Length: 478
Figure 1: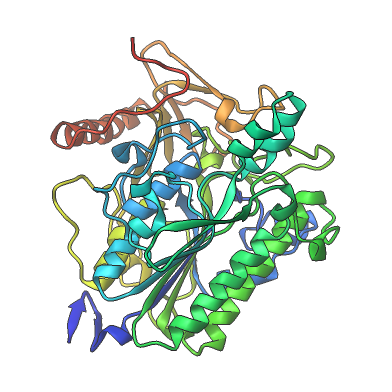
Figure 2: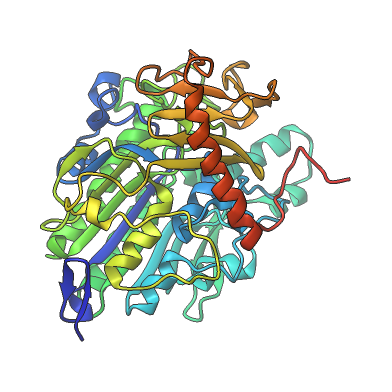
């Protein structure tokens, strides 16, 4: 079989690139050494990620959604999470789940003859239709279906006087797939196992690479890391390795585990025909939830953290490596987490369906260096079902005022507030004002024209393809 997409061609399925997609949890722009304000500077070196960055297209203007579930939905579907009803972080007792009708990145790869596997954190729902093996993955190992927060629940439930029966019913578990695609519980996901899960995710990933690289089909591996999400819990081998406390220890372990996966690709002799993608799912948690003697993750020169829509919540590390096809370089062009579905579909020669709206754009020409410019110049961010921020070129616009996420130092960004204005949005020039301290709407109101056009195009799209109902824990229809 012969196929051609752009300037990329192949003679058979086995010549198509393998894909290793790694998604970190809560790593901010200011955490890794390669991004200039983390790593050695903060006493927590990241040599493996720094090395990967040198060999990658390192994106310094890579954007995600405000939280775990929304970003993962955007990554898997190529659509704003609000279009699939996954605009809020899934917690136990909420109805949010990835619907059967969504087309995922794994399904696109599978339709093109790929072996597909996932290890680690999923966080797109526990309902039958939403589990990884019903969303295009052949196998699922060391599975975390929900949030790592759940490892804390038994402890806090006991303190609240709940019975052991109630605690057991709420216990999070590690899951693995059976041959028929159904899932089985392997063990409790508790604070004790928290220290070991990243090691086991790496082991499962490297085993998958070793097994599939010996086969005839290309493979797609999705690695959902658990680090550096709270609660802090580095493997014993990494305790006290950093001078930045428990968070730094976790980051150093995470760097090591990423290095193990890259080394497995190299050991299999498939590095030149493997795309390695490394991303973070959202911005940082700046204040440790368990240990308060050291700071946690960092947004670098920006402001914001997981859950809000400030620059530092949405602008995170992103790297794409494909030797001989994607030139290694650093770029400040805008790319979003939604772009990987259309880009990989383009590589594989797949046409996306036209019965739904897509927000990702095909970045293959930019990735390959055939164009110096990204195909993207804007991104909309949502809180609930509402447009909460628009990034256009170097400008960030807020329809409602975002109250600083550290107004209460014990709060996460998800506890930030938004306040109604007097009819004009807030406007910030990110390059000149990275911490968004000077609202320049009075002198740069001309930006509001493009802003209104972007929002207008989105509103037109949802008339043709309506969004499903959004779920909220703070706003209830009467």
